[in-house]
Structure formats: C-alpha cells, structure tokens
Image 1 (cartoon, rainbow, N blue to C red):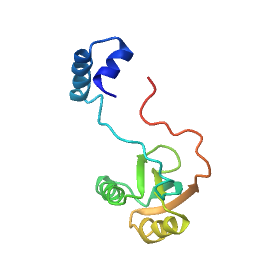
Image 2: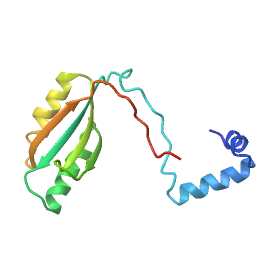
Image 3: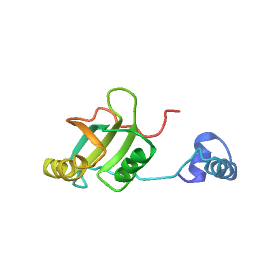
Image 4: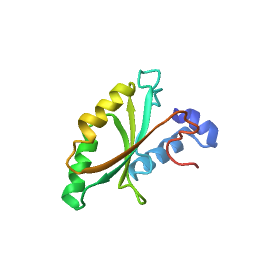
Length: 133
C-alpha cells in the first residue's frame, strides 16, 4: 500500500505515514514485505507437518540440525517445541514422491534424527501470517 493510500485509511498525512512506517521498520516491528504465493498453483501441491525427535541434545547437535533445516528449501518453517517432539517442520513439496524422497534421502539419514512422525495436510482451514492487530 502506498503512503498516500495508507494515509487515507488512517486519517494522517502521507508524510506522517511515511515517517511512522520508517520508524517501525527501523525499530524492527516491521521485518519486511513479501508477496503471498499460492503454492499449489506453483506446483507445490503437498504440504506436510513433520514432528522430529533428536537422538541426543546439546548446542552443537542442535546447531547441526539448524544448519540442516536452513539448507533444505522444502522446509518452509521450523520450530523448536515443547511436548512429545523436539521440532515441528512445515514441508512443501511437489507431490508425495518428492516428499518421500526428502524424508528417506535427507531427513531420516540425518545423524541427529531418531524419530520422525509426519502428517499430510488434507485441507487448510486457516493459514494467516503475522499477528492479529
């Protein structure tokens, strides 16, 4: 949205909106801007949630797993969690074969991974980004 359009919505001048937006960016409240792409229309029709347990823990092992996560574009989000898993991964692949290839050729052979449980997303009910304001 342009500053002029935003100014009209919030009843401020465009220059005030620009200054406030810039201040929010500088403060790190606004982290960036992006387009929301339709994964299925781009050929990524399979989404899965994978819960991963590591075989052992320690900073170097967790750093190693973090590097693994960063190096695989199929992993769209990754979270260290409480509960029965150490990590939860949000995976996007083209199809079930590509998903199986990722799990069997990359994830399961990783030396830190002891258990993998996956769920295939059948239908997305809600997929908001950011926070509600």
